[in-house]
Image 1 (cartoon, helix red, strand yellow):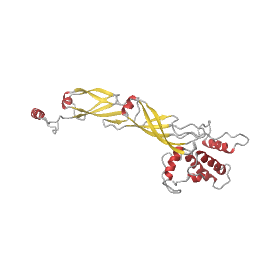
Image 2 (cartoon, rainbow, N blue to C red):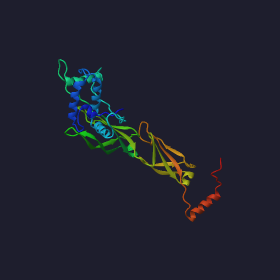
Image 3 (tube, rainbow, N blue to C red):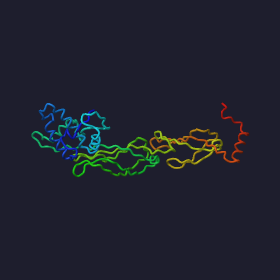
Image 4 (cartoon, rainbow, N blue to C red):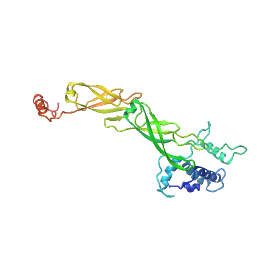
Length: 309
C-alpha cells in the first residue's frame, strides 16, 4: 500500500495537538461527508479523512506512524505494522443497530439532527494493547506477582503525543501455559471523548531454563544417575519446578529410559505430566583404585555392548 501523509490530509502540522487534529477533522468532515457534500470526490476524501483521524487521534498509532514517516514519503510503497489502520471503533450499539447507524449518529452530533438536538461527540473506546511477559516455570506451578514496565505513548496536557513509561503489578495465575494471555481490563490505550480505555493483553513466555523442556503442560527433564543406581535400582531426590520429589529408579534401567510422574506437570484441567529421562553417568577412571575397579569389571563381566541380543 502507499504511504499517506495523514497530517497533510487533515491540513495540520506534525506537532499539532489532539484538539487541533479533532477540530481539523470535524471541519473537513462537514465539507466532505457524502450525506451533505456536493464535491465530486467526497466519498474518497472522506475515506482518507477517516483513515488519517483514526491513526492521529490514537497516541500509540500516532507514535508508530511518526516513526514510519521518518522513512517514507507520500506515495511510496510501505509495509504497515500489525493491526494498522483499524479505523473507528463504535461501542454500545442498540439491538439491530449497525456500524453505519453509529456512524450516522456520529455525524449527526457534528451537524445536528433535523428537528432535534445534537447528542454531543461520539465516545470512542481506546485501542487494546499487547505485550510479552517472561516468567519462570515455577510461577506457572505456584502463581506469583510480578512487576513489569511498559513503554508507550500518550497525550500530554497540551494534547501532544509524548513517550511514557508505566509500571504495573501483574498477578500470574497458577496453571498458565506457554503462549496463553493475561487480560488486564482498562490498562490499554485511553479512550477518546470520555470513552473507556482499552485492555492490555500480556502473552506469557517462559524464561529459558536448561534444566527443563516444556511441551504444552508437560515438562521434561534429564536426570543423571550412577551406573549402580541404574543397574540395582534406587530412590533418589530430584529437583522440580514445584520442589524436590523422590523418584524410584527401577533396577535394570538403561540410559535414556523415561519415567513419568502423572499430574506433576503444569497445573490445569487436566494437569500435565513430568517426564524424567535417565542419563547414566560413568565415574572417571582418574585414580589407581578407580582403574583397578574398572579392570576388575572388565574381567568379571561377560559384557559386550556391541553384541546384538
